[in-house]
Length: 389
Ligand SMILES: CN(C)Cc1n[nH]c2ccc(-c3ccc(F)cc3OCCn3ccnc3)cc12
Image 1: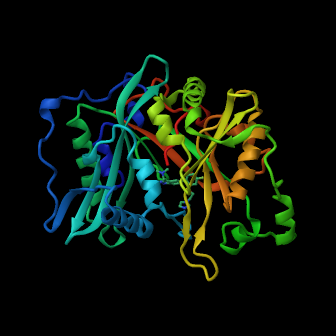
Image 2: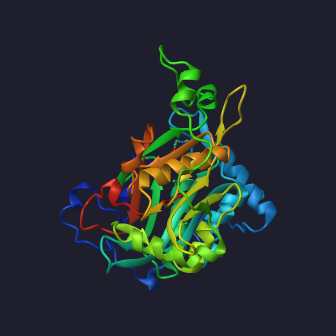
């Protein structure tokens, strides 16, 4: 019976506890193209597969509504992610994307299940090892049809669609722990709008604290400190690409970006991605910061429907101290109207979290590699150089 915990994951090529020592680094299972099923997995009757075209407004709206009502909530079920349509187009339509990797399940033309993949080349543990694979995201099953074992079928179907393109690995993250995380990172929050965070129940006041006291504690200057800080423009793409690729080499997991990919992932898009560069000397970009917009719906609150959250994306500080660069990120995010600034303890983030008064969140974000045994069983958060939205 498939309802023992992790029964599905025990059938997948993921290292289990007692194999951590015996498996040699690299692919766990050899991929054989000839063995890949040519037809989609069977679905229970009335359920149908579909490739979702996110460029089509109606189909994008269906994805938006499914996620808004049924996707990830915090541990206390007070907040639920509310990814916008423009955000989903940014996250899922990068250069080289495959239309059959945006997978939906419909019942009577209504979207009830979803899972996505985008192509990435992941550099693993050293400069030489780079693997073309898929980045999996947005696994979602409508609340009303859970326990139909639809999630394992969605996972198997997108795995088949990846295998058929002769790719055999995947990278993904999740708040839950299933076999077997390669890293367990933690998220931190920095208050920008103390009053709102208390009103929505995100923060709470202890006996001696008042709202006014909190507002004073987290108050920020009107303007950023770093001279030459400005929004990124097209003309910066070449320099940002070089800065980013050079910077990421220090980590054990990272992507290598082409200029086209930097254009896609970093050029500012209103209410989706904000990127600012530091150009002190004419024409020379020395640092950049970036954060993305992911609001959470406040599930039951008389006064507020949404929590506006900015999430730290990639930040490269070569001339400006990282603490100062991120202090400016807080100021910029506050001025863009965000209530809170979130960051994981990956990359160099530990260097600024405490000093800039971030508070630890109540959960963790686990990183996973499908069908790959690392040399080291687990990676420390500071060895992770990839951000998944
Ligand atoms: C990454 N991507 C795959 C989405 C995703 N899935 N599962 C998750 C679990 C935690 C985080 C997360 C990551 C960074 C962060 F600062 C706060 C987070 O969650 C707070 C709790 N929460 C959930 C909904 N509203 C608030 C993201 C995710």
